Length: 444
Image (tube, rainbow, N blue to C red; front, side, top):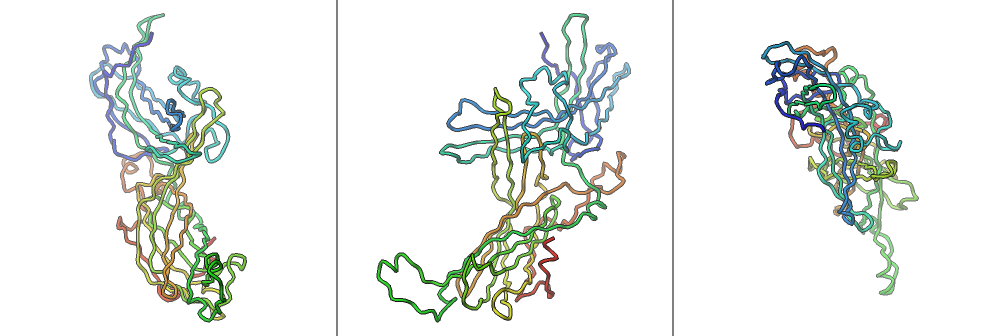
């Protein structure tokens, strides 16, 4: 029978607070090992990554479905000399998850604990060697579905430990000495600054209908005489529906400041019939925020390909409010609005985990907002929700494994402008910074 691990040695990281990424070298020292007891055995430093997801149903609270996935089991061996000095080690973070980890002896011992096979479906990773997902924790979230509550939580964790295996003899048990596990924080792969600067700046447009209901839209309209029942069942108040176009970047860096653009456009006639001149509309203020949706899946205990998959939206945060006075002006013929844009800057918090996909978890980010308008003395509002992909901060090219590459200034804060919560709006009566901006050029 196996012997429980004994924590007779200790592992200390040189930089326990560093944010590592693929290709980085993790260094540290091993202490308290006793060379006279190892009989020349080697010390193994092990970098382990695992992703765990959990789904629980309120009507079935006697059982929690789990998905436990090994991501990496990366090792390096050290052969210490017969001395009591501290032992230095270095281990490199892999570029991607490892394939066929079911054959690793340390994982094979608990084969039923791990899930090694998943169905090929969106929005999860399909490549058996996809990029390492970032360290993250999804605290418990819940949603109501079919008259029951579904709860989900999970985490992606990387740890480093030192292990000494000693064999007492043929046919006898092995005694394992190990250090406590040290958490290692890993983020998604970083591209170089040069590659990021060459990356095409593509935007996306979300179109949402905003409806204005106001008697002053058509003050000369004749009102037909109706009975009490007809007045209750109909509404002759003039209505006007226009499209709110919001332009958001497709990709952005966590911790950076992005620009959003908005304009009004008259929708097609099938959405709203407007038989009166378009009025001036003022964008008074906007409330912007960011939110994350995490999709988790867990395999059922008997049929591994019979899976539970649920999306768990998070609460919006990093709310930023701005009061403005941008007026959208109709065209000369009064049938549409001029194409000038209203511009805003939104600070993405550095705490936002980059977008990722792995076997049992995936994340998506959205920039959302509520925009408040005033038309002919009456207020109304519109909303938008636009997906955005977040990536890790780019690094300077040529950064290797030397001391310079370990310095924090190798990570470039692309577009950062401080941690202030204010939004910088530039607007006015039909202009942005004094110059018209073309919608087509931004929506590429």
